[in-house]
Length: 186
Image (cartoon, rainbow, N blue to C red):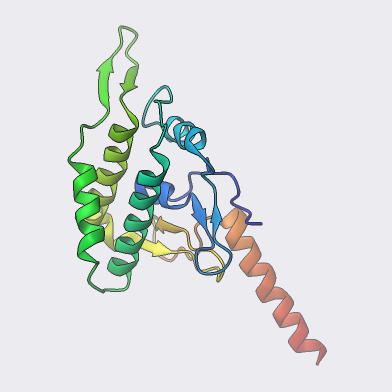
């Protein structure tokens, strides 16, 4: 099981990248962290897109298609390859949906409301703004072999190697330490 088994772990530095992170270890065991419509609704609230969970009934399949298309587009950009037209069109189609409605409350706080489709629109817009903006150059994939999480490297020198130091960084460093120890015993 992945150390990122909590879908509410927001370490990627971008809404769309955090949503992409709700699936782990895509190249090996594929761990799905959104097991149903209810989990999707909970994630939307935990991510701060909406204040209360909308009715997500029947939306999980659409959300997962958006998530995987965004992941493939991000990887293509990361590797300097063209993205698939179908994936790009899917992102664009979701981004055209009505965004969450924001309103200022009397106490100065912000109210966020909308449907599950407006939440998906916010995720698609986040992906498009990342890919078309200055942070695109900061996009990276975790350096731990099993991890497929994408993140924004906001470190001073742009040298961050892991999505999260507490999990992937420590695991990678422990593995390297054990490998060095094994070399010295032979």
